[in-house]
Image (cartoon, rainbow, N blue to C red; front, side, top):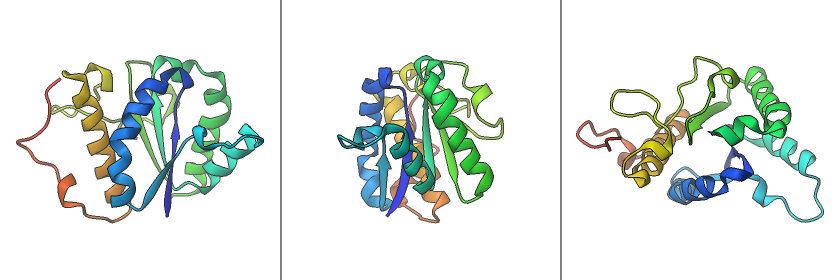
Length: 168
């Protein structure tokens, strides 16, 4: 089974949880698990567990927000390991997701397209979509498209529909 590591700030647990609910259908469709630190069991070392899961993951979702970029652990531990993993292995996909407006650009390569994007192909934070639930839907849909494409899977219901889509 494929594994996607989800990096998020604990202060964004509400946003993370709602996005994760929208990703559940993708787990079965893509034969993928979305790993996050809530899966660390009692008695296990956080740092060691996170490092092991980063090494074992073939894709990464980075849930950017002001709390995310303010997290010292994320900036000094998780992100450097993920960036190093991507540099060392071209078979790794990194998907930045903008949960809330923040300065995400210094932390990812400029060539990586963040999600979700609006009809004009501009990044639009999940919480800025109207209604907000459309932001979660669009993020999950666009993540599904990116992951499906990366793994060479064609899922009919993830095919872009030029007439569909939410407006911010």
